[in-house]
Image (cartoon, rainbow, N blue to C red; front, side, top):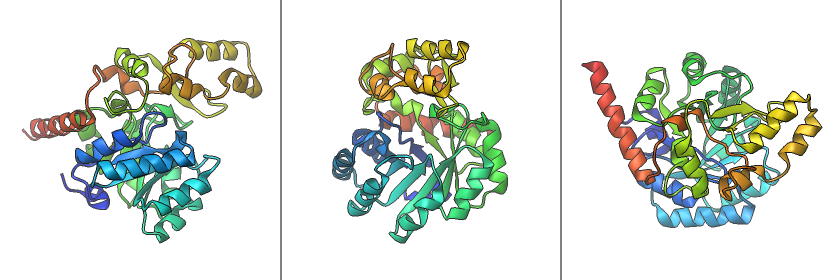
Length: 312
């Protein structure tokens, strides 16, 4: 399965594990990397000292390439970038911000940089900033999402039409058939988030993982566009948000409903009623919790089988 993405990251399969908050610690990242994909540590939910610990443990758990995902809205991003350099991390995925801010700095240190976007406009800005690859994430994705609601089926060919650098598809991808579809549309690889949430190694709470497995079609919704668009499971917290909308809540009132540490409460601590349960639409196709290596293996096997079926 050698292509531009496997060559860029020196991995066996063009499968990138999403750097999700409260789910993507060193155990998950190292397991995916050991299985032939690219594991990412999700720094967005980590204090600087916690990130150091996860990077060091990941280096001990795998001799394969792995990276760190850093949302650029993180308040102590300067400290995180210093840690990245100090710990010798070779791959960084940036998101939620202007790629010009850090790309040159990171590349001057010999780091491979990818940036996550939700539109053609921002994909081109990322390319102009000098990133090595772009992750184009469709509306189906879990967690924080683009405001334009462009689906992966539309976004990937639209970005491919304009982009010269390698393209990674994200949003609504959990199976080998979906991986093949994304690559037929023009992607060089895929980034998979929700499927890896329901893995043994994900650091998210078991109760949250089990709720993901229970999810059916229509059980997630994109909401809170006035703050930061987020796709989550419909629970009691979600219903509180909807009631606030029905009453014509202001942005300040929505912030009050959201409160603090809502995502940690739901995904990491397992509060299924009052926590924010971020997951993608593809949760409806996730039916079990299994080792990350098994997820990679099954995706690759299904990809290859589906490819044969199309050719025949």
